[in-house]
Length: 306
Image (cartoon, rainbow, N blue to C red; front, top):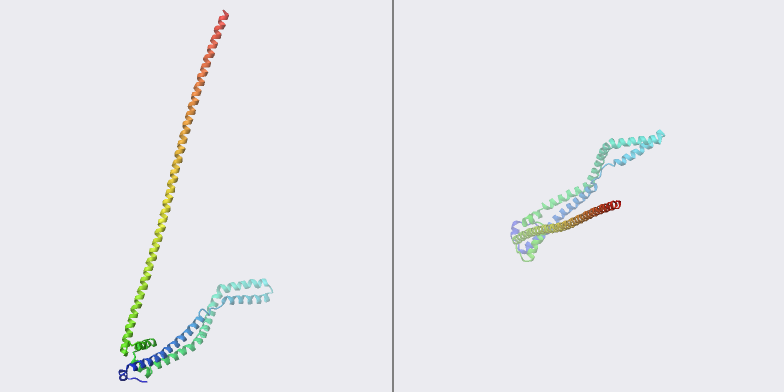
């Protein structure tokens, strides 16, 4: 099946639909090559994940095994478990202090090289298969049939999904020629891009609105918290003023009581002073009475003596 430009120019509607059906079959075959390549690449990725992190030398196990071997040898040679144990501890300290890093570097490199060799051996069949598939894909794409199809349908539309869309345009009578179908596809694709852009913009607007609502809600909550804080402060101030007023009343009552006590003490002092004054007057009166009695007695004695 080879189409020339002249043959394509004389295609009827039915010829165009038939040619699009053939193009879809070839597009599916071409895309199948791509799926096979993707499948092989997934297998390679699995192998890479499988060997990721492997190859680090287990130097701690090596050190433990070395310590056990040294202890067993020395305990037999020295015939002393204590000396063998002491020497083993010294060897272990030296191992973990200096030898371990060197051994880890050397053994890790050896193990990494071994792991890389093993990994490449597992990957190689897949890379070879990918190379074969790509070669078949190139041969398929460069075939005369494919070149003929690309003269009929431009390469940018050579996709099974796009061709199916073009066939649907013919089936729904939205197009009668390939040019009409391609123009309708481009217009629909443009509208779809605009719709996607509008959806993205709408989603962005919704996100922005949600962010604004969240911000306003946060401000509202903060305002309510501030109001509650102010109310608490006002309540505390009221309680403080009430306590101050109660304290002032108590101080006034205490002052009044002190003043009353002072007045009572003053009255008591005055009463005591009056009592003392009365006692002095009584004493003076008694003294004058005694003097009068003595004077009378003296007068009586004088009279009797006469």
